[in-house]
Image 1 (cartoon, helix red, strand yellow):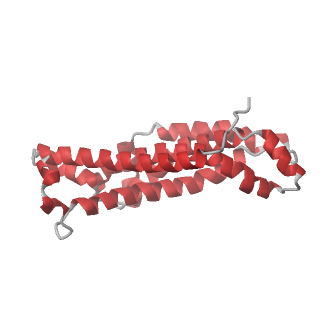
Image 2 (image 1 turned 60 degrees about the vertical axis):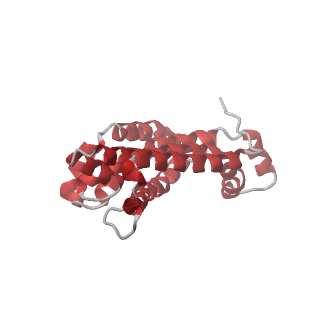
Length: 228
């Protein structure tokens, strides 16, 4: 614990100071989650929307299984192998860790968004249509507000996972909390290794608790009824 309690390690004037490394770790994780959500949301919206005008063969809902299957396969790729594959293409840059992190978010986000949309009570949609709402208005004012708690639940999972995996970025020369762990291993300095583990865990737990608070606020007065 002496490493964490040493004020010099928190000084912004020091190289590899703890606050800067925490911000770098959060930056990698949050950028990856934001990009992942920007990709997963329209895909989930497409495969979970039924439109009778589509020809059955081209119905988007038919591609939910293959899409989840592909995301599942990508999710099983070891992060080190993924990064090693990307190094010749993206080099020793943040992209080499961000691309795998974005890929790993897809499985959880797509599943949660689709499940959240399907859990909305169809009666509420019928009421919205009876009020003259268009498809876009239904999604904006009915489906999305009711789906948000489950979507946030998926964001909690991918945020914590991304923060953990981002620790490996030191392997490609991108400094974050993983740098402390690597330095501790190289110099056999157990306090620095312990400090890195504690800080990463604290950052992940804090992010999860913040999102849990948002999820709880959004869940008040809203109830989703799973459709079977």
